[in-house]
Length: 182
Image (tube, rainbow, N blue to C red; front, side, top):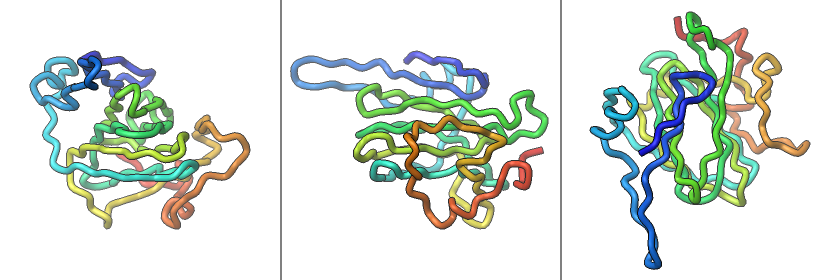
């Protein structure tokens, strides 16, 4: 496993070691000991989630103000533009974002720690996304930041088209009005 730092040091890109031949491929998508050894993080994942979305669907930017979730995100088919936004008020990176292209082909994973909002845009015809979380889903604590908040200025790879959003995501708040982590 290879771990790649991002501009926000707590957000990581993880590249598994893939073994392939004429029959196909094999890789360990997650190993707690190896992950801890390579990242220095002792993580206990409690839930796995799986979504399928069509091209142009944007999910996010989501977070839970209580019961915050760290997420290890990967794509098994298709490609997404994945984003993490630092919502930790005392962080030197507060309000900044980093992104990563995740695909079934590159097999990269994106570690989004607790204290971050997370979202993604499907850039292929469709995408299946799997992610592990460090706490359980708690809808009463879920919050959403607007995907197009001008204060964040996320460079979503859109060519003028408007992404497909859920009602919840359309009703998201701007960062300046949102509950954040202290």
